[in-house]
Length: 243
Image (cartoon, rainbow, N blue to C red; front, side, top):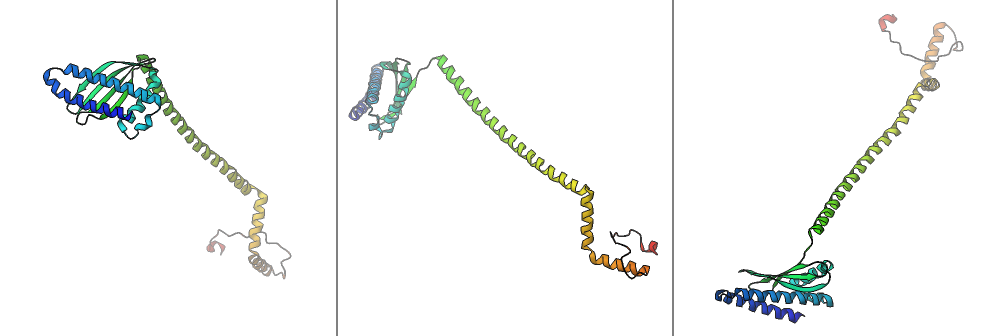
């Protein structure tokens, strides 16, 4: 098969050279027909290579290898290859483009073969399946639905994440409220208040003893058995008022 493509490449070079001379002689239509026939032969050989599973043999030739892979993928929509039905050829200073019409059991297609005008080698092979208007509309609708569905799914996910942050903040607030209410209830409990006062008083035992002794001396009593110092408060009166 590799030899076949090499031969076809040489033939392409010959066709290119003939095109330059024949265009001046007014035989451009005959040259175009020859190029189309060459393109049809190329498509038939591509189908044979794919059927034989020999695509990997052309991995070292990127243009041919890519063309064979494209043809293999297109066969899923084309169905059974039923032959070719002519085509068109365009020759420019830089390249030669041959478009071959392909007949298939499910869909028809076109194979565009591009040759380098300088070397005559393959510059690219592309297979384009022909779909009906209804099929094109269905595919467009499916792409739209998938795209919009993806966008809405992402938006919903973002909304859920934001809702989770709000829920977490509410849980933290609810945890702080019981602690604050417990502190307030402890402060308003009279028993707790009395205990706190006793604790404060116990911390000032030395001061209590001194004050009790001073009161006993003031009353002329030798002991402090007649009274008990329960609390000590700072007087708000100034020294002048006390005098």
